[in-house]
Image (cartoon, rainbow, N blue to C red; front, top):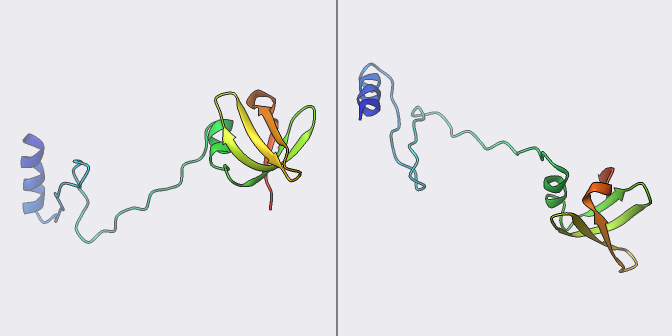
Length: 104
C-alpha cells in the first residue's frame, strides 16, 4: 500500500505512470508513452542449452574420436541423438563433445 501511495504521489508530481496489472498478475510500472522493451534472446549457458536450441537443425559435433554430421533430433540428460545423412542414428555423450557447429 505504501508503494501505491508513493507511486500516486509521483504521478501527481507530473510523472504519468501506467499502473495496470498484466495478465500474469505482475504490475506494469512503465511510463505511459514508452514502448515495452523487447525481450533479449538468452545466451545458452551450457552445452545442453545450446544443443536444445539446435534440435531439428543440421549440426556437426566434434569429439576426440570422430566428427558426426547430421540432424540433431534429441537432447537427453547425458547424450544427444543425431541422424546422419545415411539414416544411421548416432548417440554422442555430452561430455565428449568438444565443438558444436550448425551446418546447412
